Amino acid sequence: MLPSCMAFAVAVIQGQKRLEECPHLAPDTILALGGDVARQAPRVDEQREAVGRLKQEMAKIDLAAASTRLATQWRDNRLAVTCLGKDFWVDASGEMSGECHKNLWVQVPVLHYIIHGKGRRLSGAWVAFGELPGATEWNNFFCHRCEEGMRQLADAHGELLFEILHLFGATAASGVTNADQSLLIHPLPNVPMLINYWGAEENFASKLNILFDRTAADNVGIESIYLLARGLVEMFRALIAKHSRDGKLF
Image 1 (tube, rainbow, N blue to C red):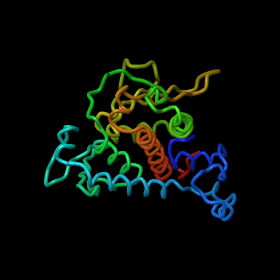
Image 2: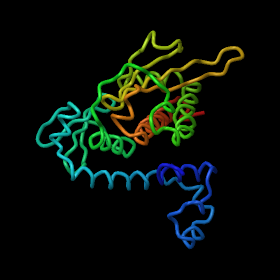
Image 3: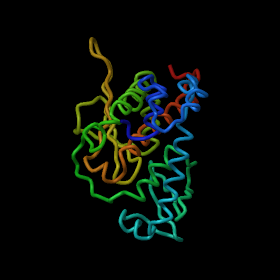
């Protein structure tokens, strides 16, 4: 059993699940879709549905109380959530505005953070994604789409990738690991990511991992943590393709 429809859709695309295994699709729908679903990208539709559900939840909460719980700014009946160094202002309907262009990769985690975040203080203990509570079903997706995806970018465009990370507020985290590059970035308040990269040398392949504070799952849900990391990779891919010399990723 996978944790959500989005997880199942990803598994279908990756060939790990068959469409007919979905308990929510009618047989005639499955027949109509056939094998084409494996070539489609349902992420946007899934995330739009998730935003719709979260907006319904937003309408039921006390936004001022949420601002106090999360220790964030409150102004003109909106609260601020800082994402990658930029403030997004969110109202009671779940609408977001800010200095940066909002996108679904950001909107889902931000709304989940407001509704469900406990505002727990950081523990200072770094753990792998798979060690977070509830991460078991998501771990393979995270390793493949997030860590492996970012490692490939670091291998092919290391200088540009790390420059982009610094532009989004990443700082060096010396002494935490023995990685060649160890960068701390804050996609959400109280949800920092520690990105560690070891370049290839002699008979050793390159390696990249992304660590989280042990409290991360209390401050935003596991699916939202996955979306945050996946969103960073997708954003970096787009920026690198735009700014690399030949306009290519690999």
